[in-house]
Length: 224
Image 1 (tube, one colour):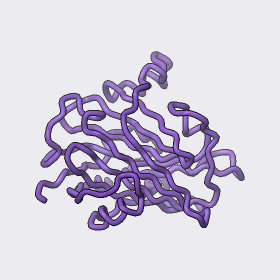
Image 2 (spheres, one colour):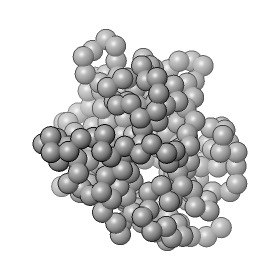
Image 3 (cartoon, helix red, strand yellow):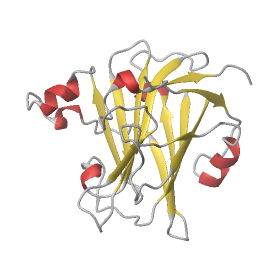
Image 4 (cartoon, one colour):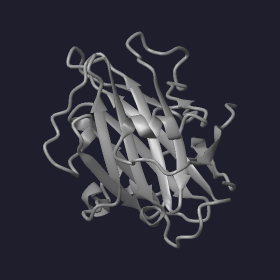
């Protein structure tokens, strides 16, 4: 049985939240969690690495992802489209330990976002069984801010997300000392193949990103 991931979400000093470079400096004390394909015996030949760092300040969670990619693209043209069908996307799943509902947020390399909120773990099963529509869980009002940056080399892209606690928590409380369940994942789409290369920070035994039993735990550190 795979050991589930636990990470410490560090409290970061003030920084320019519109700058990925500034975020990188602020989050340099946080150990990265890496994206993997744990449901396979070995990673696919076309798998490319990615890593994620997290930090918090006041009532905000910061997520910084660095994704190696040889074919960076997305056909997304607006927010709240089905981003995983349109090209590359970085995904964030977040649920405070004391509640059943959870958020799913996406960011594409061209800067568009998808926002979903599910009332419980059975919600996605109802969608898959066609007893509910995914549209029912869309959130239209802005829930978080993000910046996406394609490196000038064209070989990797970065995402910085700034997520208010109230966008995830039903009953907001101080983040210090809190625990959230989390998973970060990606769809690395290739125009040279029919299916994307997918990966996750969670120890999934099959490629089901909504399997919360295999998500990691994020602990929000107290202290200055």
